[in-house]
Length: 162
Image (cartoon, rainbow, N blue to C red):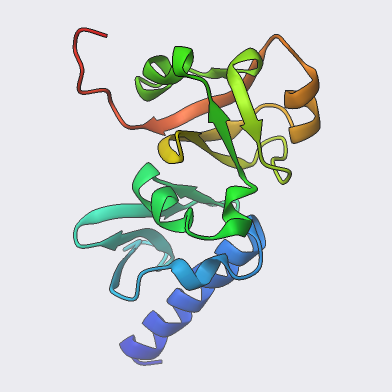
């Protein structure tokens, strides 16, 4: 198999994974000019970049660890938005610094959030962090206490006096 065919198959794998995890059609928002980094040992896809900016990392379990930058790109899709939640003004600064999202601070929640799934955390329609759901949509809406999402990657706040 030549390098171009291998690359095209890798792009297809990433697209299928995006559609499986976040909803059919989300993959059409994958940028056309991606660069794929492969493992030297196994030959598997490790990272996906666009213009030297990391978009996502493929996990060994078949999942994707997306970055806030990539989540913002995928947010153009209505189906992807169902895997997101919105937080209030009070918790925005803490979440941007990498703190977990608590149920009482969630103002809106998409219907496709599952325990252990990737979740993008929004504030005023912009992605401020991404993490792993501790609770499902139904639980987040019904609970008033406890952690809803453990943050993996966030936009570090530039305001030092917050």
